[in-house]
Length: 379
Ligand SMILES: Cc1cc2nc3c(=O)[nH]c(=O)nc-3n(C[C@H](O)[C@H](O)[C@H](O)COP(=O)(O)OP(=O)(O)OC[C@H]3O[C@@H](n4cnc5c(N)ncnc54)[C@H](O)[C@@H]3O)c2cc1C
Image (cartoon, rainbow, N blue to C red; front, side, top):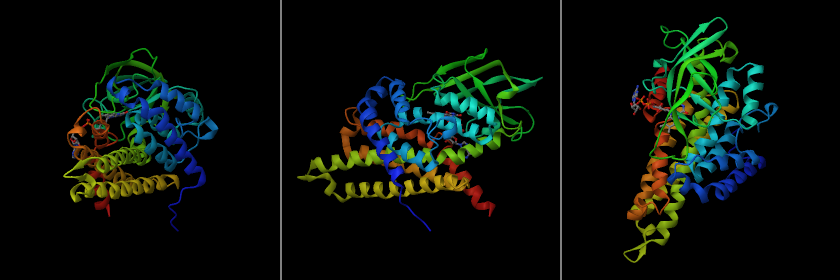
């Protein structure tokens, strides 16, 4: 049986997230973007109402939300500002590997620290290894019951703010896939530094920085999962995180459609509202169709995870489709606004800048298609 209806609790959660987004984020989104200011106050308020750390199980103090519920929240928050969305959701991302492969002691320690107010980051990408995760070079050398880490990670969300990091590094230089392990590295370890903070096209209030590891010593207890299982863990994390990222892209597209629809009913050209021109109306109709389709793909991929069967192909379908459709929806929204769409006084130029990264992070649109064709040819 298929049931697309949300439960009363899920409807309430979505309403609460929307009200929060409208009241706390929309009024300040433009200023945060202009000044590239990290949304500390919004994060503090989100903590008060329970909109951060939502995927942390209740026994560690979180909300214990399902991935579908994460999708509902991600869409509403990103409807208001996807930069704030990224800043708020990174703890969820960092929590996934801890939940997946962490020991009971590790879960108690690290998940509880997030609930108590700490931010965490998730560090896979390196200056010379982005899409090709297995090309990473950061190295963790085992010395007795410690590891010594060297290397750098780039484009790491929330890195300037986080107090600990889930870091992937090689423990074997030869074995491309089975030579990678996963660790937790605290910010205050000697030799750890945030080396560069990026100025970005969009999602400007979200923090993106480079980190550097110079002879950083961590205890063996900070390794997540068995040595050599890091690549598999990173891939398993993607299957769980991509539905939520897809839902966030849906949120941006929905905002673009709402703004463009309103404007097209008010703006008059050739003595009639521009929505009456078929060329404009069809752009809006396509946005509506594609938003619905992307949301369903995201929910389906989330549902797979929630019933214990994460599906790589479904997650890639959702991510590729949602990111590309959201990009197009925002470009078309700017088109519908005409010259005003290009100006900072109107909200759609920010949406168009913010949305581009959905085709890049969490695996580019090309990588999603590589995954899909690999899954298709696997038979
Ligand atoms: C704002 C922002 C936040 C981010 N946050 C994080 C984070 O928190 N943690 C983290 O670890 N990373 C993060 N990233 C990194 C992000 O995941 C990578 O940028 C992304 O995976 C692409 O890697 P790359 O930038 O090295 O591009 P590359 O891998 O160099 O790709 C460049 C181009 O080549 C294409 N390409 C590469 N390989 C193939 C292929 N096999 N087939 C077809 N096309 C290919 C890509 O699709 C892309 O168009 C973030 C990035 C950004 C921009």
